[in-house]
Length: 396
Image (cartoon, rainbow, N blue to C red; front, top):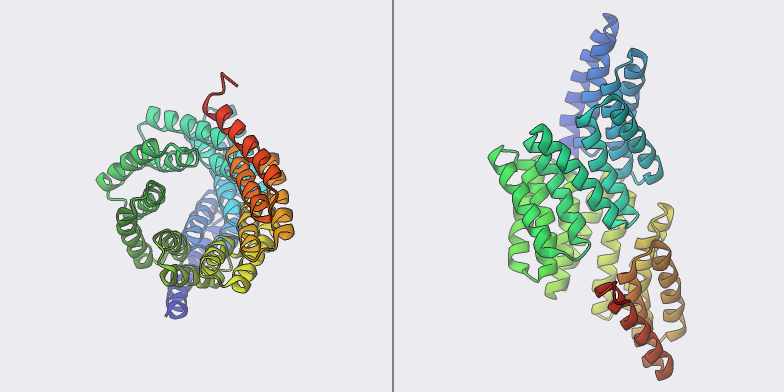
């Protein structure tokens, strides 16, 4: 069914591609460079909305070259910003950061406040990948201040949605909920249904962490319906993967597998290998919980491989923690300790103290299960000391 849906949407893409080609050829024939740039820019937006990110990058680059030839600074800033966001979605994070920093510098030099806000907003996504959540939050807050100053309500809501995620990742769930609710209200008032669905997805992730599973399910179902209606297969896959996490939390293992496998099918149809890793991690957890350790190990190994291909060390470490729990269940304590040792060093390199705490606790549990109570107690003590320092940094 999903394959048929992809083929149907591809037919629509082809007709729109032909329309853009006709308009571009006319602009080129007439020598209208500004018109050509605008069309290539618009085509990039259209391609990105259809999850065709590699084609979108080519279109934005062509627009950027023309804007540079014309000396159009505002056009350059917008093209650089969208190149940054789109290459991020392709998993080319270092390249994306370069585009966004160039956009931010150009916007600030030219006094382009709108361009500055857009670059700051999307730089937050780079900080998130780097797990620098406080810097992500600061970047979004600066963007929020500018968009409010300019009176751009839709842009305010877009930033609020991202800010909601940034504070959720720091454990501030009530604040995350408030920002998401504010964004939802604006999108509803402006009748921006697709952005509303994106925000429902973000809010559902907060609801899962709050343990409000029924609310999360309702939000995810509404978001999935909208994304399927609009042919947004990448976003549909993201919702399905979140649904898989929800089903796992509810103990509905078969439902979790069905959602994760549907998400994988969509990602593969779009050629988005990077984003397959999260589905493999969920599948690994489900198989582990059901005692299917061979299947769990295969899924987690694949997640680690994909994360390695895209230099996502944090996600690799997270998968290694889960793999260690499989080793521990099979009483392969040396293997579990090795996996956890690697994960611990990665989390320390990222400066993620809470992940360090969880890994120390995993290590303590593994040593205790292997019979080494002395080492288990020492690691538990180290975890408690970090928690105290995090909860009361002045006292520490």
